[in-house]
Image (cartoon, rainbow over all chains, first blue to last red; front, side, top):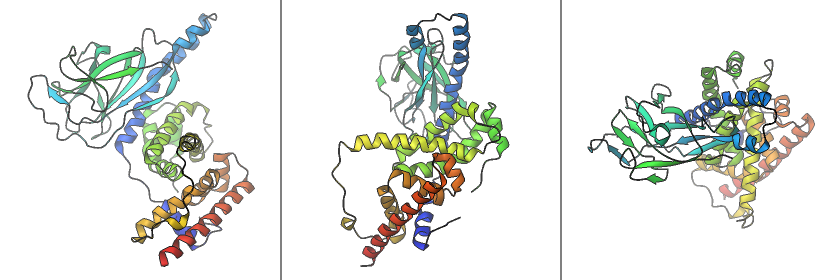
Length: 203
Length: 182
């Protein structure tokens, strides 16, 4: 496929062709971001329907309806405690860095009742179950169960939260509470112990 | 260079999440390679690739069913890279110390590993549009017709960009090799 090149240029091109290894966490983050977008998408259709029904919707209202889809990615390292106070075994938790990131802003129809879709990502390879608990779901362990992305992949789920400050944590195997070490820490929670702070913003 | 089965792209366009996951897993390494070579930063490259796939997902409605997926994907990715480069240039302009002459580089000891690093350093000195054209042609093995679809630039201008990139790389890498031989 090489044209108009000599041996030096071919050698340079070859050195640039090494493919980076696939990082399952990176691809999981992309899927989580896309799932957050999909969670917003029905609202966009609803917005069109609402505009058709209410053609006089004010610009201020429309601006209020714009919201961001967030992706919360983190690594569970340390900051772990169990509900009964014993030391949990999370040695199988990955040490791969997974920076917190946000997806680009996405217009949505109705943040007043339903909130902004926030995708959570969590890696705990040997966990049997993981759920995200926070003030947005009344710390209900059954409200937001996470699903595994692939056989050994991270756990993901999408939750709706209203714009503003939220406190959350992850519940592993129904008893181990894990705070996000890469997010601001919150103390004295309803659920007890440390957890993390999430800011949901509207653009 | 292999392309994804067009039927998979079609399923993804119609909302099949598993097909979209197949696309991400299939193209992620190539996309990350291109973004790294364009941006010279792992963190920026990962951001560009994630943004590109999210935009692919959001824009699938505009993807023509009879079109090839590769040029469309790389068009979106190249746009993301250009945006990040512009942002990075604005940032760098605040901390610019001036260009370091190539002759100031330390001589290489491990030729294999250092050669790749030297190539990347020289690549970074090229104008972004030449770097982009060179990478798409000689690293990603896209045809000139596909590169035209990716960049929106005419064929003759693209050939000129690739030639200029090759000329500049040849001159600078020859200088690097001569220094290493001393």
